[in-house]
Length: 217
Image (cartoon, rainbow, N blue to C red; front, top):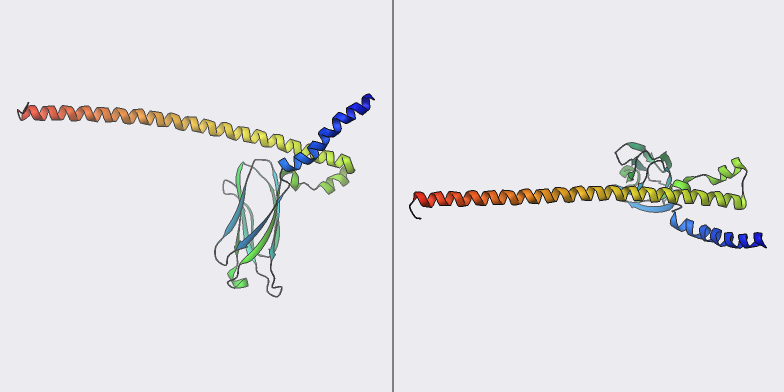
């Protein structure tokens, strides 16, 4: 009876985690881009450091006789080139983030390959736990079923914890920046008020001397 009672307490918790964790952690994002003949379209995501990013992109074309091509460039928040391909119809890029910030993936069409038509691109963007190859992990560690799902939940919980720490650090940085800005504005206001008082005093002194010299007062 004691074991049954413990199981009754554990199962609701595991049940809630099973359904809530996938909601709290994005498992991936599919993006559809319609790239014009001239110009560039980009997608970006704010990602913290030490996170695995995996993305596949593919041109969707109804005309199978003439397949358009595109060029792709992926850059880090500091402008480092992470992926660069030209004249391709599909591809994949994968990297581990080195710094926190917005990671940018830009696509533009090769006009000579398709004339003046728009090019449709499907992008499957995965980060963090969604980018893990769970099939390989299960095969390597010989786990399956409930045990594999528990491992996924553990990874999701760790990702939640890391995201919370990242958000807390960002909030602390923003608060520090806001306090510094408020302090600078306060000092600027005091200096402006002091300059105004000094200028007003000099004006009064100059007018007084002027009127005395003209013997008006």
